[in-house]
Length: 257
Image 1 (cartoon, rainbow, N blue to C red):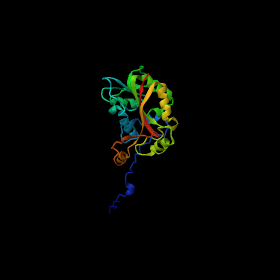
Image 2 (cartoon, rainbow, N blue to C red):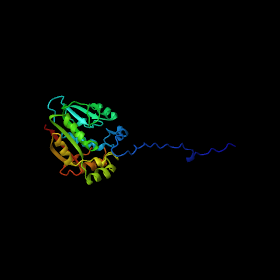
Image 3 (cartoon, one colour):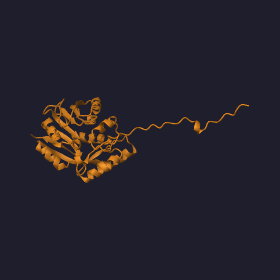
Image 4 (cartoon, rainbow, N blue to C red):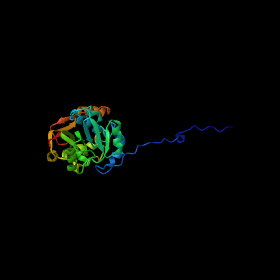
């Protein structure tokens, strides 16, 4: 008599393997190594740099048209080149960043890459018609050196466009303690509130370097567009102007001397 075949049961099944992507390590606040950890994410509009895409679009609205074809726009701390779609046609778009992986992605978007420190840029005096310092000011330890470089790079009459974070309790609460935990918000520990800058201090530094503030305003997420983003992450969020400078603020300065 043949032995009766045993019906395979759960114990005979091949064990499944659960693949879990390793999360980036939690670095010290404002640690530059974070940009190496997140180098793959620059052009993911749903990823950890989602808010940088929204801010780049808002920043682009402040950039004037070039006075002539080939005029130079210097994009300080350009990262992966997120400003590229928002720079008016005709500019020579030069991006400065320390991170080689980010610059490689910027080059793919038509940016002319310069690897270097934003407080000691290897470009000549007065070479730029426009300088952009977007989401950069609050990451720089030596702020006077950065403002000095912006002034040095600008040609007389040139314009600098900036956005940064105010040194207020509300900014810490909304953009760090809460913001770092919200979808689309900044990555954990990307900001160090110690480096946040009050508008009056920034205006005084600009003035000391011959840069006159032409306009300055607050920026905030447009609530209906953020709700749409929560429902469909492919929908970009619109940043709207506000009179309050209590958290995120932006502006434009002109070199007068």
